[in-house]
Length: 180
Image: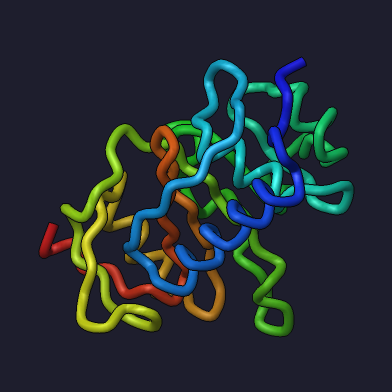
């Protein structure tokens, strides 16, 4: 079985802080990593190790027994019961398949951890809360993500991961696909 963090208290605190910084400042790229099984980026592994637990069903595009071993998180049988989902964009699309919350409980939505081939400060223009003027990220489907943002306060949140890097795209972020 693949090990988790080498120094769990310190490594998990650093990873949690990076994830929270990414959510608070959409479009910024942060380094975070944990030993990952084949088929999962170190940033996605670190995110799951920090955020998943026995109460958060996780939908996995590719099975990872290590997740259950290290976090106790149940594997979601369907998309409708997933608190988190992880995989490449083509395995997670369309966004309409995931819970987006309800008017009374918008927090009851799925957070998607999307494995992307590239993560840098180029691509689609982003504006909104946490972004001083604008930021840019290479998004897998800017139009679908703009439609998700239009559901705010409902919608899914995304964490994009590539290697040991991650960025977040909360549902409150305004996406400008025409500026990609």
